[in-house]
Image (tube, rainbow, N blue to C red; front, side, top):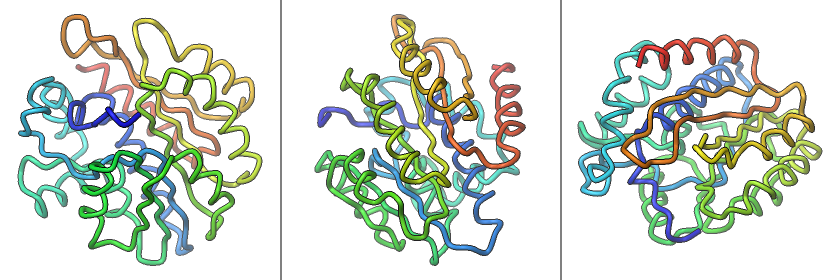
Length: 257
């Protein structure tokens, strides 16, 4: 949906959850001296200014990364936070494309899709120092065209806005096809946990289709009165060894909020 811009939500508690798990998995993958492919279907602009008026308007970053950054000091996620600040200023926050670009290597392939023209232009600019391919296209379609990728080893992050309500119905079908074509790929889906439980049927279908996947959720208070998101979920096919332990560690961090 072309109206969505992530700046309103950058650095919130859902971002911290998603990005911490993403960074951990990427660090795990790069421990082996073998090239890999990273695919992201809904990339956004890659770098966000948390002092931007739109970020300040919601106050979500103040409740998210501002409170939890210290918990990730010795973590690959924390490394990307510091590198992004060093390169872009103290109020800069890395989106998932920047986290991937910083943690991956020159031998790895990175494909990023973003359909919003202004967000794509910002993404292309932010990624210009890195060996990355930015696609101005629908991310689900891009993924279908690339899978199975070369190199075949790697992972994909699916992180839609869910403003297109049919995503909840179509995503399980897309993931079923991705998994069939790329049975060795790590396929990670982020989803919001809302007060209306819009995700429930989608997750039930995914769990039935992929019983060995890792499902990890964290809960938190609404960002403001009337805000519908009360948690964050990740559904991961072919999770790397140790991902369940890392997920439990993150759960303990959120319990202390």
